[in-house]
Image 1: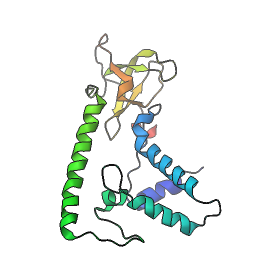
Image 2: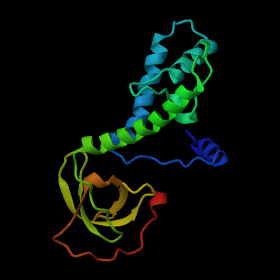
Image 3: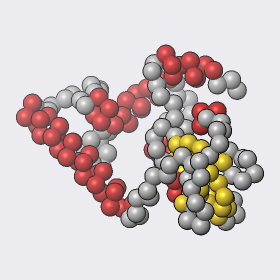
Length: 193
């Protein structure tokens, strides 16, 4: 499949397309949850549904409040969308909802940080010597050099002793303390991977 139409679409609408690190499905959890929700929505529709039925079902899903009390559309647009049901909210309730929405978002971010339970790994610099965990055998392979860091900061581009250029999440890289840090010879840019 030719990726150029997608890349043209991203460029036209100024979308920054970032891929996740391979062998790290945790970094793609939000996308996976969205796919799961759409599959559940489609399974609930009748086998003879048309596109109009799907649009109504999708509108209902977008405006249905989640566990935190806010709908996906409210999180995206910052307001409630019109639906087939009448809207009986008044201005005072709307102001309370907005303030509690932002407090809820902050509380969720704090809760996620606490639930992570791990220690934040220090960033790596270009030229650092690291050991890389093999995703299949789970063994650590020493002797790789960091060539670059991806834009969002959690993925790095190490080059192994054998010249293989990889892309790995920070959790699969450990600073190699047995080898002194050397500057790396120029190699391919991370965007070429």
